[in-house]
Amino acid sequence: MKVLISKELLTRIYDAAYMQRWNDQIRPVELTELDKQAHKMIIAYMLGKFEEDNKDFRWIDIIEGGLFEFLQRLVITDLKPQVFYKIKEDRTKYRQLNDWVYRQLNDIIAPLGSDFCTRFKDHFLSNGNTVNKRILSAAHFYATKWEFDIIERANPGGYEIAKIGMTLQAEQGKYCDVKGIRELALHSNLRSFIDLCGLLRFQLRWSHVHRVPKTSVLGHMLIVAMLSYLFSLQVAACERRRANNYFTGLFHDLPEVLTRDIISPVKHSIRGLSNLIKRYEKEQMEEKVYPLVPKGWYSEMRMFTEDEFKSVVTIDGRVEHMTSGEISRKFNRDDFNPRDGGLVKAVDDLAAFLEAYLAKENGIACKELRQAEGDIKRRYGRKAVAGIDFAEVYSRF
Image (cartoon, rainbow, N blue to C red; front, side, top):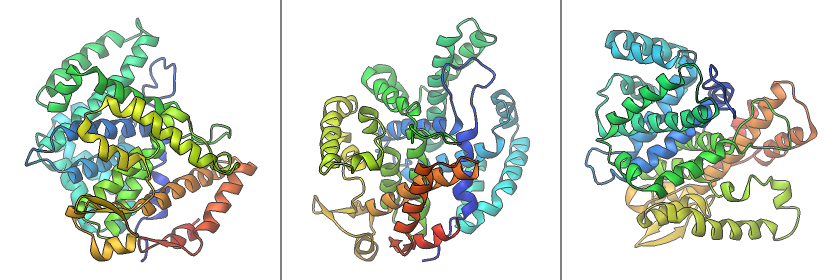
């Protein structure tokens, strides 16, 4: 199957890793747009879980809305928030801004199809008071406030710090109608889960190698999630399959908050080490992570973080392993709760390849990056996953 995702889109999404946030303030750590967007979508997942019984709630609207807003930020990131929100208050000016954003992105998203492009444009024109848009707005706010708390502690008397704090405090009151925000206010364990996931902002991928752009584990998780979703669209996956693929990508490296990012050569240097690490990760997740969220979420979180690269369906309450081809032929329905672990794995490898490729394009040549780039490209040289010709993807680079 011909790949619809362009080389330009694959590389453009990494622009968010260059984009510095709060760069007019003293920052004790680097805060990037990619990490902010990743944290936002993890928060959106939490908020969404509290709305699943709402008849107007749809996971696909949350996922695609987050993706569209991510693409929008790639274009308008130089606008200060105050200016952006002022424009947003004027519907005519906001429409003009989004028309311009779409023109900047048209060439790289057009291959995804006219339906995708229409949904992109409609997202910014539609009513902002739907439950799905409220969740995204609340998640955006909470991730921003999380960053500001770091800035404020580092620079309590800084210019405009008090004013920004007051503005955010007033903004918080606007989300009292979002059930998940009320739950966060009541339960410290939920806030701790968000804090724990936030630590992956500061855990760098390839930490032993100098790279540009640097990417965190959290940012990498979002990229795998978004690309897994886009590839799922291409194979006409059902809604549940698309959502499962996305959230598996978004959470697949969550156990690394407990073990750090252990590179593949180390994992496979000693026979059995990879399995030992997996067992340890599972034990730590059971002990330290799952207790932070409601018990009703456990089975789903386990699917996203354990055996995350296996393709599965649920038949009569039993989880069974299937190939992506079998899922497409027989089980591509929401009631089978399908997940393409093999596709998520292929995207995970593609993200690692892109990290090495972009570092090389930015003038950083080292043996580790060259070897990783070559090894991954050879592995997929004649390989199709879920019917998608990944060999074609790598032939573009």
